[in-house]
Image 1 (tube, one colour):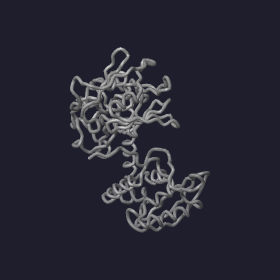
Image 2 (cartoon, rainbow, N blue to C red; image 1 turned 45 degrees about the vertical axis):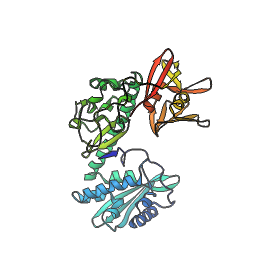
Image 3 (cartoon, rainbow, N blue to C red; image 1 turned 135 degrees about the horizontal axis):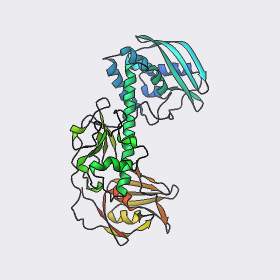
Image 4 (cartoon, rainbow, N blue to C red; image 1 turned 135 degrees about the vertical axis):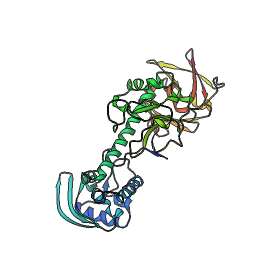
Amino acid sequence: MVRPAIVLLMVASLGQAAVGQTGDPRAILDLYQSILARGDTQGALGLCALPAGVQPDALADYLRGVQAMAAETDVAGVARALALFVPALTGPVTRNVVGQGAEGTQAWVECETAAPLTYREKIFFVQVDGSWRIDLVRTLVENARGTKIESVMTSIDQQAECAARMRQLSIALGRYMDEHGQRLPRAEEWVTAAKAYLQNPAAVSCPSAAGDVPSIAMNGQLSGLRGVDIAAPERTVLLFDSQPGVSVGTDESAMARRHNHLATVLLASGTVVTVDSTATLKWTPGATRPATPSGGVTRPTAIRNAVEYVVLRDIVEPLGGRVSWNAQTKTITAMLGGRTLDVTDGQSTAMLDGAPLPLAAPPVTIDGKLLVPASTVSRAFRLWMRWSDGQVTVSLGQD
């Protein structure tokens, strides 16, 4: 089972929720309760300041998981920690306000709650665009102190940080490949190679693993390969959670499942996922093309600061793709082989199918044409490139 790695509750700055109601925080709380009592979780969330990027469906999945846990252990602690969602967990709620306060753009309401357990809870509020909204993250964190749910939330936080570190490693290895003929480092050298491109050397370890030794491993079957030689990068394991000190593995036996029995995995495509099993993933890279490709298109290159550039349109369109230019945003969009690459003038990161793709160097404008690093075109569209006498010959890869 594979699930995209997401940050549910503990991290990220407060984002923009749906337009809330003005007025007293107590009135917001009353409205929130009445909406939630009708079973409208998404409507109730519209009165909250949610972490950026959190979707109601993802939050609902999280709450269902907590509900299952509450049925087994620490019912009182879980109920108190998730007091705002008690109607979704246990049924009707009775709340009596016993205290409240406000300071600047923040406020709180203390209640005595019975549903059917009786306990004290604090609900925190924050002003967003002049309207009071429930500060969901702070409320959950503060009411979780000393409860079972605190450890669950800590694990979620660590999993989110682990996924962020995997993304940092993806960028670092991409930069390494840009400078080494689009080849991955040898497996036994990958930690040293990645650290040369990392601002945070700790990214080679999961935050939940003890000690300073690497606890993320590379799939040894990809050692030294070019990215274009991996047949199904969207399903092939590149990096994965491992035991401390293990930096290379070739199958699932080397994997560690630290995050509620899940492991964090970086696929060769650059996507980060959390898995409970790699049964649907690949460890063996396969092959994408014959050793000597034929056909293709030959175009001149321009060299700036030791980086070889090409005109994107001159490469993509002869291979059957399409290229368009947005003069307002100064963005060139290329579509080839089911993939879409967006490159913006002056920016060192492109977008590949909506995901960030670091460039070896920012694009340059020569004779009124926007040129991009040749290595970026190769990585984005899995092209075979051969350089000779100021020219590059480009061929499509074979699946």
